[in-house]
Image 1 (tube, rainbow, N blue to C red):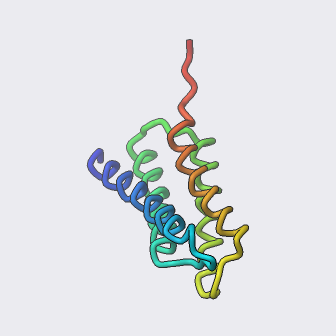
Image 2: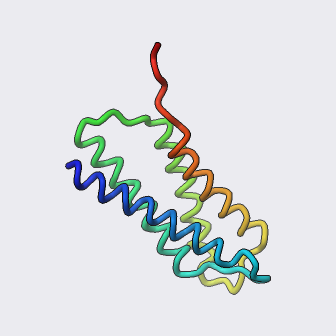
Image 3: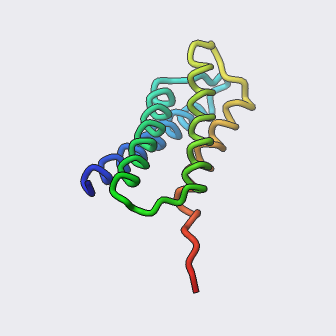
Length: 119
């Protein structure tokens, strides 16, 4: 189970790397749009995250449900926004920056939200 957990974690991180990379590659472009890296990265990160939680739950590993809920909601919003704009010729600037901020926020939650330590 540990190997499966690590593979899923790796795919989850790669998904967010692709999503953020797909956003950043367009930073200087006057017109931004949903590209393949954003589409595939958002989907990969979302699905791998869901499977990762399932593996942790099945292995009776304690899971911080509040953290998982926050990450789930952010990732779902990202996925919906990316998929809803996939066929549009351009992304509005506000939506572009919102997707970037949400993607970075999801990574920040993963890293900085640590479980409460008892004294």
